[in-house]
Amino acid sequence: MFPCKEDFRTKNYTIITSKCRGPEYPKKACCDAFLEFVCPMADLINDASHDCAIRMFCSIERSGHYPRLLFFNLSSNGTDALDCPTEH
Figure (cartoon, rainbow, N blue to C red):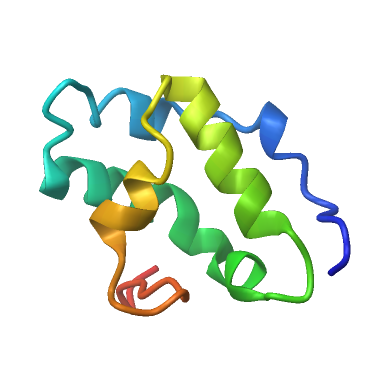
């Protein structure tokens, strides 16, 4: 696995942190915000040859103090790949 060239520590996660709030973490609001953030870079995140997805999930969790794997569990479509709407 290659290291990710994208620096996820410097991304702006406001789209997620402003809409997905605990302690309830509403599924629709959290998934919609997550997909809005990540779908423009779905090809990068879905590429398993590097660690971009791992770095992205860790950075999101840190930015919003989210429980580990929250977005993976809430927005999973039964696979490891993102299932983005076609308009993204």
